[in-house]
Structure formats: C-alpha cells, structure tokens
Image 1 (cartoon, protein in one colour):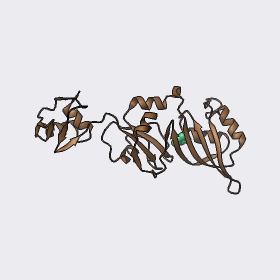
Image 2 (tube, rainbow, N blue to C red):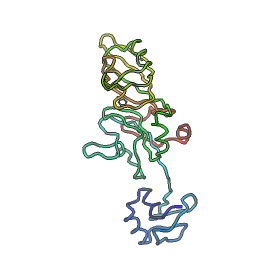
Image 3 (cartoon, protein in one colour):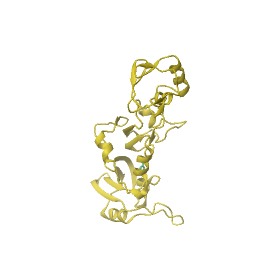
Image 4 (cartoon, helix red, strand yellow):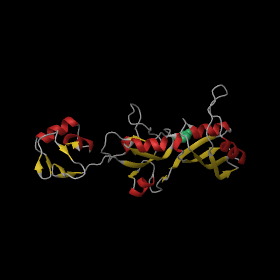
Amino acid sequence: MIRLDKFIADMGEGTRQEVKKYIRQGRVFVDGVPAKKPELKIDETKQKVFFDQREIRYRQFEYYMLNKPAGVVSATEDFADRTVIELIEERRRKDLFPVGRLDKDTEGLLLITNDGALAHRLLSPRHHVDKCYYARVEGIVTGEDKRRFLEGVNIGTQDMPEQTAPGKLEILAVDKQQGTSEILLTIQEGKYHQVKRMFETVGKKVCYLRRESMGSLMLDKDLKPGQYRRLTDEELKSL
Ligand code: URA
C-alpha cells in the first residue's frame, strides 16, 4: 500500500507538493472515483489511478541499459558536466543511479536503476561478477602481460601497494607498424581507473575503453553511444 500523492510523484508527474494540489483540484481518479485526499492509501498492484484521464501505472523499480558516451559523468548530479541520468529521457523515478562508475572518457555498458539490492549484488567484490572491457592500447600487448594480469598486478605504489585480483586478458589484434593493440580484459573488481592503471604497470597506455558486459548483461550492439533502452524481462531475470 502506498499514499496516493507518493504514487503519482514517484511516477514522475510532479513534486509531492504539486501532486497534492492536482489531487485537491480533482484531477486524479482512483478506480473511477475522484480522489480528493493525498493521504489515501492505494494498493499499487490492484487499483487503477488516472491523472488527467491518463492511467498512471506504478513501477517500483526501473532498469535501463545505457551505452554511455564519452564526455558524460557517471553520477546522479554534477555542477559542471552532464550526467548519465540526464540521458535517460523517459525516466520516471527520481532515485535512479548508475550501477558503478565508468570514467568520463569511457564508453559502454552502464546499468541505470533505483534497485539498490541489485546494484549491491553486482558491485560487491564478494559476488565475483565479471566485467569485460574492450580497449585499444598504445603498445604491443604480449603473452607476458597476459601472465602478469592473471597473477594480479600492483596498481598502487611500492609504499602503498594496491594489488588487483586476477584479470583475464585476451589479445584481439596487434598492429606492429602502428605499435597498437586491441584487447578484451575481464576483471571482477572496480578499483578507480583499474583497467588503465593495470596497463600502466606493463608500460602501456589505454587510449580507448568500452565496457562490453557486466555479469550476464551484454551491451546491446544496436545501442549507439548515448542511446539506452529498458532491460528485457529475460535480462533482468538472468541478473
Ligand atoms: N577501468 C578504467 O580504467 N576506467 C573505467 O572507466 C572502467 C574501468
């Protein structure tokens, strides 16, 4: 059960104060009857709520897959830059957040939701969720790098070591003339700038980074950077 004003405000129709006004103005109907009391308790699974003749369906959680473009920040608010939340134009809930952070210049899969329990499961190191990244790297990536990543590398300093868990490195292509490589790296952690710092330990520089997957969730190839869609029921179930 949920208060009528909260029901309508949660679905993005206005602030609680605005919604209270709409209700008092008689613009809201519950099961065909005008509802004048903002504090009326609604069974959100059964009762039908109409606002200005439009049915408002209650959804507790929203789940969006975003192909994050470079240049926006993985935050809910920022005074200087556009945030990933602002890209989700059809968002209803005001409590959406990105599940984990990608750097401002990183592209790729970012889950946007207000489901805190799911976010915790995906991010907690205890749950060992694979995150796979595609990168273009300056330098020739070698079998030796693969071996070192598999052992874990120190992305901190000698005085303040920060050891990574094993990472699985796959070399997709090497351009000896240009001195560049394309790779996939799968890690289960999300330390600050982790992929970039792992490559720095082997003397190489990541020049393009994109997240391809997180657990069972794969970046939809039809989504261009900046585009998003709702998760399908199957994707949600498999998470
Ligand atoms: N590793 C990085 O270095 N940057 C990201 O955005 C994600 C992983």
